[in-house]
Amino acid sequence: MAITNWATNITFQDRLTLHPRSIQELQEIVRGNDRVRVRGSAHCFNTIADTQEVAVVLDQMPDFLSIDADAKTATVGAGLNYAQIAEYLHAHGYAIHNLASLPHISIAGAVATGTHGSGIKNGPLHTAIRAVDLMGPDGEIRRLTRGVDDEFFAAIVSAGLAGIALSFTLDIEPTFEIMQSVYGQLPRATFGANIIEILSSAYSVSFFTTWGNDGAGDLWVKSKTLPPAEVFGAKARTEKAHPIFGVDPDACTEQFAVPGPWHLRLPHFRIDATPSAGNELQSEFFVDSKNASKAFAAMESISHNFGDLLLVTEVRSMAADDHWLSPAYGRETVALHCTWKNDAGVPALVALIEAALAPFEFRAHTGKLFNVKSDHFRTVVPKFDDFVGYVKRVDPSGKFQNGFTRDLFGFLE
Ligand SMILES: Cc1cc2nc3c(=O)[nH]c(=O)nc-3n(C[C@H](O)[C@H](O)[C@H](O)COP(=O)(O)OP(=O)(O)OC[C@H]3O[C@@H](n4cnc5c(N)ncnc54)[C@H](O)[C@@H]3O)c2cc1C
Image 1: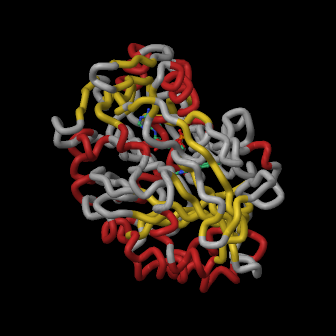
Image 2: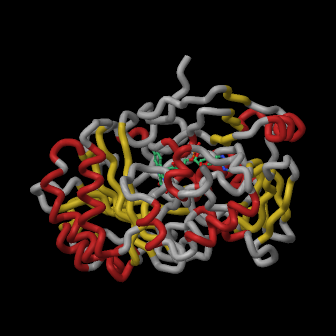
Image 3: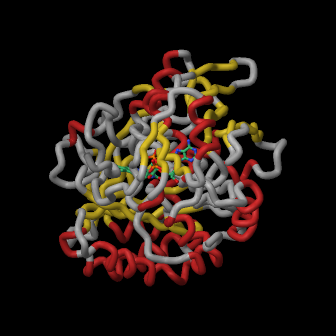
């Protein structure tokens, strides 16, 4: 049976798909093959996790999760998904700082593409990582630690090129409660003129719009303190909302400001439900927050082209960080995301967005759809060439590369 990504728009071309059950089995695979591509939960929308050679999936590796209360860290297996990690942490009285819109994704796959949630003070998910155990192309395992190893900031958001992550040690904090409220009909003009103020108004804030004639959108506010009755005149909804109009909101986490644990509020979608629309594509571009209002206006100016292919746009924020390929490397960032119908017309609309955002030195989410090539990445990712040099050093034969990474990073063959 054909193996596909979650969205089913990519059929993987693996010659062999292997699910090692131990470090030793994985070492034999890595040592015995010229090309090996590791895959997580396959939630990317492009061929980043594809290969024509050997694919390895870590879902059969022994689970491990442990907490070091003195060090305030947890160490978790790289194949685990965020729901498994979060449930364990919460059950032991701990939390991590943030989650993406869905908890279904593997931690290794998520951090490899710079996956993020929202929150003006919250870095993307990889910023919680303190150390990683990585298997190199020789099958040897190296530990890289933040603040100790220079290459740490190249090796986590690595598109799978730095090696096979086996485990991560994460910064943890005491578990906390969050309240989620959705405010309806916030005028787009108001949001556009006050983006940073609005995105800063609570722990994690997202704005959703379809760019429709109502001229408005929904504001999703996840707050540690009791959220206000109104935000810029928009009132809290009294019926449960889904980010995508017309989809059953039962799939979403609890709203109406009901307090609950962080991992059951920070994601928009419940682990036991289909996240988002299901049959869909996604694109996402990142701009410096100081350009957020202009970039938002640029999206609005072309949005009449989206027709019925756009399901929804989401705007989020993230704190700057130091990881070389991070969407937020060196700059406070605003993310402009689109969920699309699964349709062949989408790449042309993504290209329109890229043209509209070109003045703002946008970066692209490497797990979603984009058209720009390595020349664009090189101009907007200051550490691009350093990253290429790093990968050439740690994997000189290109064992962990695939067609996607060769196109994007333009090295080897
Ligand atoms: C419904 C939906 C909602 C989403 N919401 C968000 C969101 O809120 N925020 C956001 O930023 N993104 C979001 N995404 C995108 C998603 O977070 C990324 O696509 C993420 O990379 C998926 O993780 P994965 O485990 O499925 O990765 P995969 O697609 O399996 O792999 C991605 C990359 O990770 C590498 N990788 C996997 N395992 C390892 C390993 N052990 N060691 C080294 N490299 C490895 C692979 O080689 C590949 O390069 C969403 C996607 C979907 C489908």
